[in-house]
Length: 491
Image (cartoon, rainbow, N blue to C red; front, top):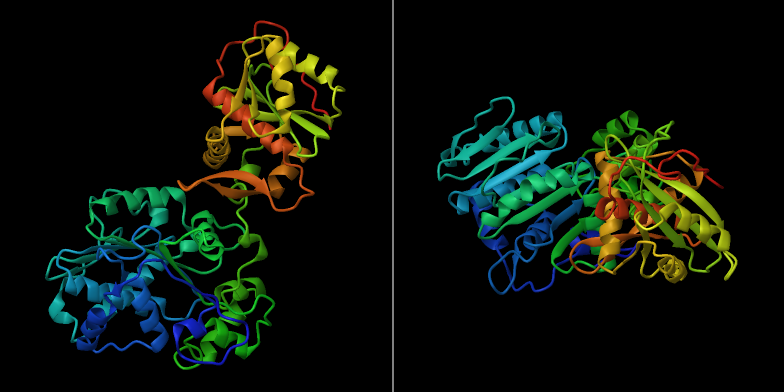
């Protein structure tokens, strides 16, 4: 469900939130019993918070949380009261279920400390005191331990928090706009031992420099209808909102002005830049964040080097052609001392039957042992037959292998195990690339949103890198053309 831009003001979640995308198969919810537990603790939620609680704790016909697979994602501005809402839900669940383990992580230590201090204060009320055993803090890991064996453990992901847990029932990722795949990999497997696990991601719209792929993908999947087992809730002002428009503040923040006072908003307005205020106080997503960029911010640039070695042996060759069959790109992958290097070595116009010189050059370079890699669905397959005729080692990527190749180069760039030469054509291709899901197993491949983007340089590099990883044999250059020396980059 998505709200319309013009609506009457009410206090219900579906009227206040810009987006409420619910999981399929809901037949019940644990919310009534949690609400009753909170009432005993003297806690009463606003109507919109009750609506959120109802959906977060919704269950399917088997009694599992309806979003136990896809999780809960909330894009919510600052000063809305997320710690109050999620914190009290977590406390109620800890009281209801003996031995429950909850991890609550933030990206930064300061945020993790602040959240722990806030929830420790919540735990110190007269109604909560009988349920609390102790609240230890060793400086690295902080806990709120319940008398029934339940616990909430706090920590910072930048400090490596998340490793070593054998069983986690509820995972709360605060500052989810800065949530890396590694952090998720550290924590989520521990939920496999839980009988009914739940993951909750809470964040504000990411900055361009944030490592926000996990958060962005959760939003994209929800809004595009690709995820039927997750809950997505977003509070945000209109995309072109005036940052000083109080009515837009009300659209973005359901707690304003009743709980979040105007002075609190004005303090943020004064301290944050305009762009940061629009994201963090008004929940507005940048246009760039509405698409899945090819690589994490800054990672591709960080892999650029100035002086490739002349002695690096060629590991593989990748070829790609544009859909109009008018342009072809060829990239090489080289073995280096520390990993692999990719370069765009040839780009030229293509006419059917008019690329004899290019074919001769590839044949001479590849000979029989250097793999030449082409995507099965690329028009560049026109090179397959003539290259095979010359006994070249041609490898055509299957439908399953191509997304593997895209994700392989992505991971190599993210981990810094591949370098490139900072070439303008390849950089432009990377800058214009986005991702598209492939199949239902979380795989994806590079694509483009703008038809004017030339993806062939990036796609040829993807093929070359995959060929080097899967089929390349690292030999010292012994024959002319084996090494990097003599290669001319044509533009």
